Length: 203
Image 1 (cartoon, one colour):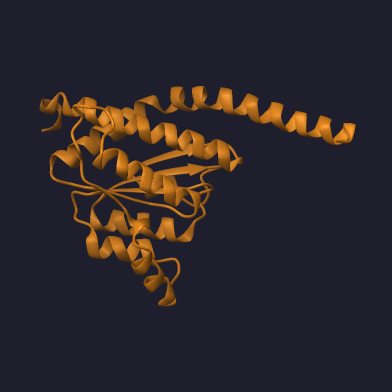
Image 2 (spheres, rainbow, N blue to C red):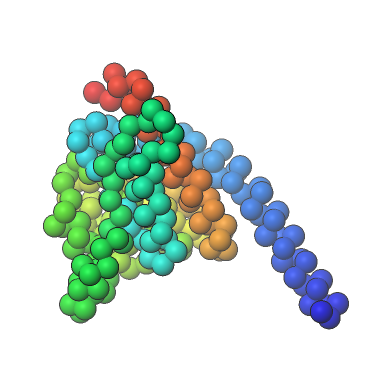
């Protein structure tokens, strides 16, 4: 490998390592109060019979699936199962809705049909510019769902006022954004169960 290429790769790795080790700490320190509020709000919705409905594109579709599995099938013994569904799971419905000529609307249309006011909508977007995710969050807000957005970069086109809870990982590297999103939804899962251990707080 040429020396200049080797040095360039080494510099990229050093920058990525520095960012991936420092950014999570600053992100969670800054967002801790709002994460706690979001978990309380989620726990109240679950307590009222609500469900978590998660969605995202590409690699973030797998995060929607991952977080729904965490709630439905807890890996820690003694934690209760809570209802959750990834809208990305149904490829036939998604492809059918997209073939209808409005590719920005499949998640929103699923929510229109499936969602109930006590439910929770969780949308993933690496840059806050995924039209179908933004449309679904807007639809969820109109339907009265609790809305959460996990975003990257500068938050993109989704304003703080557009959802109940907006968490932005300030990084342009999608791998770092996704790593922090994954940590975040595991924290949400854990704290929701902490609130369920004190159900008097959920009335």
